[in-house]
Amino acid sequence: MRFTKMQGCGNDYIYINCFKEKVENPEKLAIAMSERHFGVGSDGLVLIMPSEAADFRMRMFNLDGSEGKMCGNASRCVGKYVYERGLTEKTTVALETLGGIKILQLHVKDGIVESVTVDMGEPVLEAAEIPVLSDKHPVIGETVEILDRKFDFTCVSMGNPHAVTFVENVMEYPIEKYGRVSECHPIFPDRVNTEFVEIVDDSHVKMRVWERGSGETWACGTGASATAVACVLNGKTDRKVDVELIGGTLTIEWNAEDNHVYMTGPAEFSFDGEWLREV
Ligand SMILES: N[C@H](CCC[C@H](N)C(=O)O)C(=O)O
Image 1 (cartoon, rainbow, N blue to C red):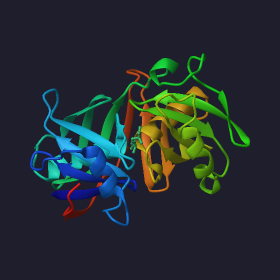
Image 2 (cartoon, protein in one colour):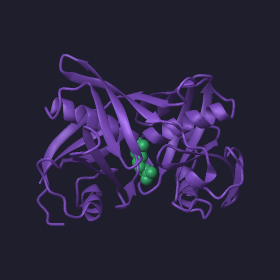
Image 3 (spheres, helix red, strand yellow):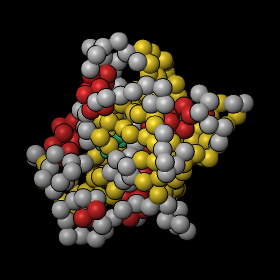
Image 4 (cartoon, helix red, strand yellow):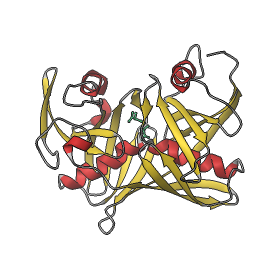
């Protein structure tokens, strides 16, 4: 089975063109292919599929085999893939996901998709829809005890659940120690993606993420979007903010007119390959 490895800000996935390949058990395949030693090595698996409701459909699976409802970095890579591999000539592409239909704006120069802007839709702030067990609305400053520390979380869904907390010196922060526990904390019935955010100034933050189902990744598009919303809700930044991640920078704008969150960032091919194992 042929596959393509791509990454957006270092959040790397294996992409399979399901117009040509048949995937029987994506959960098992995600686990097998994502494994670094016996497999390809990645943060998970993304299926590019036909859609009845949009131009294309994307299903994404974390490296533990769990299916994510939406993936920001993968949606940009899908946009680049379908255009440069000739599946579409459109530069505005509708992508069906479990988190709804997302509109991708491909920024093309000389036939190459240099970056993509994704309309991530409106942030969801109702506790029950995130979901998080909290009686706050919006869920700002929800104090949760994790190991030896108390964290104040701002919770947002971008189609998938996020818990954002503000820290100092994020690049040195022990996020595995705390992220691994917050991921499975009982107040998050569907588990959660946890973002640790350091404010640099009104339009620039640094963020690291412990992702549900994948552990620390070098970038998270839905997480960067949730981070921008949390920063605005807490009065820490403007509505347009550069989110600096380990693997690169995403520009996020929470538009005051339409309440939509827009994410702009890169997408890159790494290599094509052929998977030879029966899974
Ligand atoms: N781990 C996430 C899915 C991947 C999201 C992230 N890689 C992104 O770019 O948005 C979840 O289970 O909700």
